[in-house]
Length: 309
Image (cartoon, rainbow, N blue to C red; front, side, top):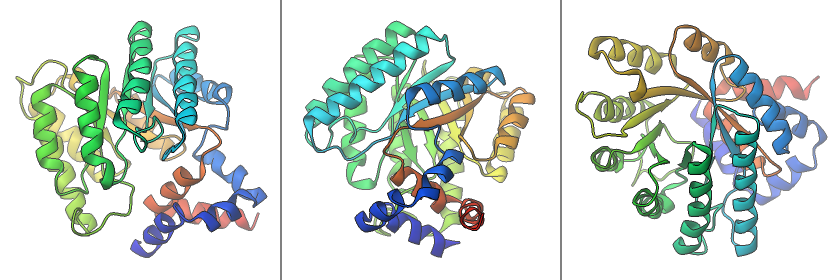
């Protein structure tokens, strides 16, 4: 439903709507479907349950568009706490962060410094750091930042969005680098000058980009694709592709968001596919929550039904 998607994407960056929702008591409770609370301790409890079910996890401390250097360093320190918790609790999880949360809006050097500290600690713990992709004004800066990090740290991955025209060239480039890539459709409102306006074209490009990483048996060392989707058609396509091409298990994994299609997550895990659940937490949940409502009509209906309870 494009009208719902456009509405909630617009609301995700609307300051007045942000203030209203934060002041609306039922909203905070409703976010618990998609957000594992506001504290690291709450998120760790969720990850423990995910691991107990045999699945992997991603931990994300919510936040973006930081314009204060001190705040960016505070976010860095929270990620160091995440990594300490992963080590202490022996969790099968890694950390995922947004570059603008690390100071990319201020300077690429600041973001590099902050993420380098996180990647170094993650290396000690024996886990990965995923540098996420945000809206298109930051795409090139994020890829440049990732490449700079990747030159020093082999445990750093990134994200590519199939909605963008440029993504095929980016995937080819990252494949040659032997990168770990999470492939998503894209959850931002993008202009038609840089992105496919039609869902069918976004979906078709998703499959094309996935093949770039999966079709070659002689892929560069370290190459791995995370198929981040709740789309049953894409998941069925991927399962058939893996079977037809005898794709090595270490070359891929499925990823889904906490609170969305938990039944399908457990089904894929039971079928023996690597399944990772993305577990976000923190007080800056509003933009994330609105983008989740924009992605699937079922999430909107969930919100509306809870308003009347």
